[in-house]
Length: 242
Image (cartoon, rainbow, N blue to C red; front, side):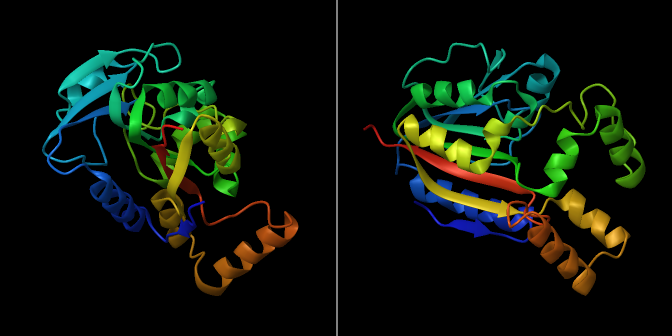
């Protein structure tokens, strides 16, 4: 199994994810990519010879994404993806908004061609930040974005934060187990601290030794089960064809 890499920031993580994609890209071959829950922008690039198909439940988000070659208006939980149709699937911060992301992952496994990869990013369900998000109402999330992160568009149509479900099926260990049961090998995985939490910590001066104390206290109080710093998780899965 791949060694989980702990990164300090999103920017560090995304560089390594992109390098993993670049190393995987077949030389000279066109690749068909599905941006699942694509939203209005993409974080990852799959080369100049890629054909990118985006699927989202919002036509407005699809129309605003100018990196797509084809657009599908549809729900990932019900849309029938064609079998062995995609060389790569990117699903970035989508599973936490779904009721049954486990069924979507099974659909991804069928839709990937042998040798293809799926890149999935989610909040880390074993972090304090994510559990607080799960057990607080959406109106609190809007308040947090608007007044603490100074996002004046928070809560308005088409903008974050979007309602979340945070199902336990996206706990990293469960996600890995389901992927492996569907013939998907864990090629690489990372955790890191979201910029939102880092920014808030700076605002309240929770850095240095006080932050170190909080990290150690959370680990001790939860017997090492929860992590206060590694708030997010990404994994690259490869379809082995077995």
